[in-house]
Image 1: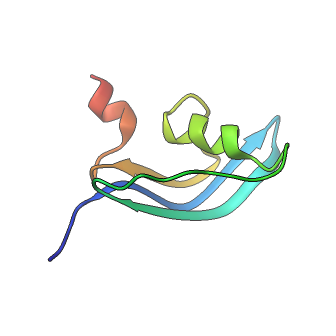
Image 2 (image 1 turned 135 degrees about the vertical axis):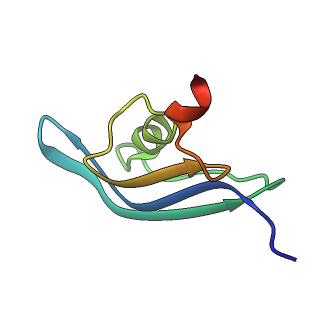
Length: 75
């Protein structure tokens, strides 16, 4: 079965004031999956979530939710 991906992140780089804080992040979350993002303080968990939601712009890479950019779905 070819199940659709709920979230697909490819080669994501996020920077604050031109300084990369996340780089080369790949993430695939299948539909109907419960997932947790864990790590120490300052590891980039919140930055990753904000970037997936379009609250922080990606310096490079792509974020798709159900095959489409999040910004496109908000319209």
